[in-house]
Image (cartoon, rainbow, N blue to C red):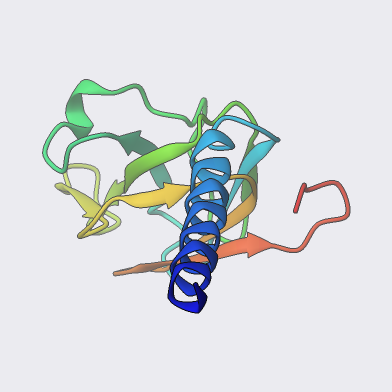
Length: 141
């Protein structure tokens, strides 16, 4: 009799854990999702020309640029119409401050899972960093 109670108790714990996992998966599309991008480059003549969220590592040229205008050094912008899910992040800028300079694309090695809340991307000359989630009074926990 005691043996059955232990198994029953473990089964209840397993069901509760499974239920908690299902709740998290079900919340993927809930709550506001914001992405704030801050550009900390050192070359004033090389603004960010594109910020792209894409589903495959090599399809960034098939997806629309989130920026309406280039993002200058020490500026920031916020996007609020971002869908939750796994996204590669790519930023594009000139390699050098010359008119015919080739463009340089920085892309995450793995997709980033954006859940809910406000995320911050800090873009530097040769790398960027994702801070997730940023504490915000209006972000959902």
